[in-house]
Length: 443
Ligand SMILES: [Zn+2]
Image (tube, protein in one colour):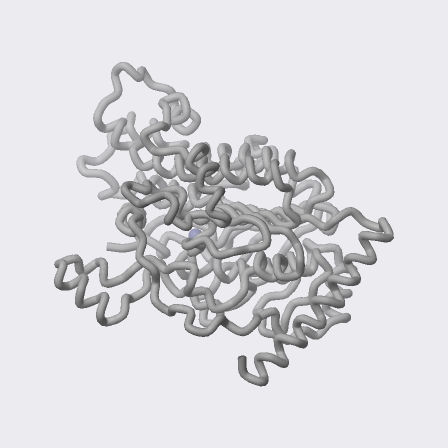
């Protein structure tokens, strides 16, 4: 540790201890219940889809968060970029060059690259980005370091699962393990959670027609055409992944109720990429018939309704003493492949004891989520963060107090020496690549 990092670390620690002591005294005096935060990520959540569903009364849980809390637009990173990069900014409050997650994939070092070339697998010269590449601390690491218990489920770039003060279930639990020995998978922290995941995991093959009929009108299942099968094939893996995250997150949240809990759902983004442009020429070859088009026309809004139902179950479990934040990393507008289909403005909903009732949020960005969560715990925004607590959503008294009281340089601590800067390989790399390809993010 260099002299200046050590000083910086000691300064951070002193502030943290002071704040910890304040929280402790407060709890002991019985002034306030324990602060709890639940953060739910909905990738590509878009107001143009959700707004009409709110008006029609079809998303009552989002509506409740808007009416009893605050809601508005959440600006993404500019220029538009890929989801893992933005979610890392949401988790750290920092721009990409500071947090270090810069793409879905990372180039292998020269030795690995020549091995891939020799194996005639040029695509494999790049590996999915892995959790050892983060260069900034996440909100769950900061809170965990201050003695708060945490739970994290489904987030991008969290494999291999790193130790936290609680539990972490990486996004790789959605993929098929194949011949990967389960005891070495490092899909969860602690490793013992892997058995829970295995029990609760949904596979695409297990998705029933009854479940599919949440999204498309029911058809005679004894007479399904190959085209109908094909139209819902991708829906099955998207839905299975979200259900896996939901079932695992809900069981763990119920059991543990950690101080901070977060779960991430990727389905809305994937469903939007897969089904938004059904009207455009070239969507399908041969083109969809009117009947086929009519069959899948409401799949996207119906997926929002499904997501609203998951949200409702979490709200029930959270109770009124928990601050709940739901946000997306960007919006969606279709009309292109990959990030070209994204829109800069996403959405944010907040509700809970530290949130303004009936508030309207404007001017907030994805960089503000981590500082906002810190503020709920009475913790300052560090000077090396790029966001700030969200005004218009948070109680203004909290925002003022946090801004006035503390000047904290950083929450970072020195990095462990010798930590690898190379992505780690995993047996699910090819499945992950295949899914990103089907969404148009890669060739
Ligand atoms: Zn996204």
